[in-house]
Length: 354
Image (cartoon, rainbow, N blue to C red):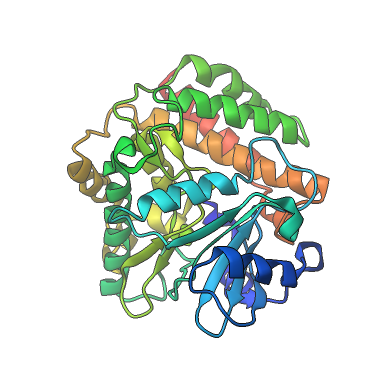
């Protein structure tokens, strides 16, 4: 959902490693020789553009390329940048039909490159930045949305116990725990007083939706966090698992669907029909039938919660800018929507529940 923060020209491809993200490449090479099966030869390191949270690198070798994600250097919020959790969920999902990269190694020794990191397969595909799919034809737009929907349903259908993730999160009360988490992160990162955000922090804990199922949730599933095939509209990898845990699939899917609210073109059903994009009602029905859960009840409550969550995420970016650890040069500018999001969420609460 943080695709609203990004622009394609400044977030596509790689660049030279930013000075604040540089590390001892020889140490990494030695580590890979010891821990990555099949690795050989020299390495070249490039940094991917974009990425608000964990700096991400392309590791190029004569035989193949890898992706390295690490904790950023500097002062960090306690609950953020959990690369070990990203690695755990990707490794577990390698056993399933959920599209994820192959994982190779997790290093929690700060002496290697300065912070914890993990290595995974480099998938050669496309990251699309425009949820309105304005440059795509009808067939591609429809295919991308159907594949995104199908990939999320596959994720939410995985039994956490069956893939060794029974302790990946606490079962039950997912939304309540998330409200607590984002409230704390917001308070830790607060840069100005926002009345609507304070209202939500007080109201939401006592007005939570009923959880219908516990599954593996992504936490930030969006068009910009999936990779599409180079020559087809299929999702070949779900990316950026930092916020994943065990939780309520309905909340996870509703968060993904906020794009229909936040993007003016997607909010226009006639535009969606003409472009080949499923309208919101059809998109929700498509997913509901795959996981056999009715999402019509409490949809607005989930929406208010998720707008609050997104505001908390963006405020965390502002906090990292304040502390000098933001990985995105334009993070301060891009995170300016915190008040708009919290105002929209509180207006939804006042309209439907107060």
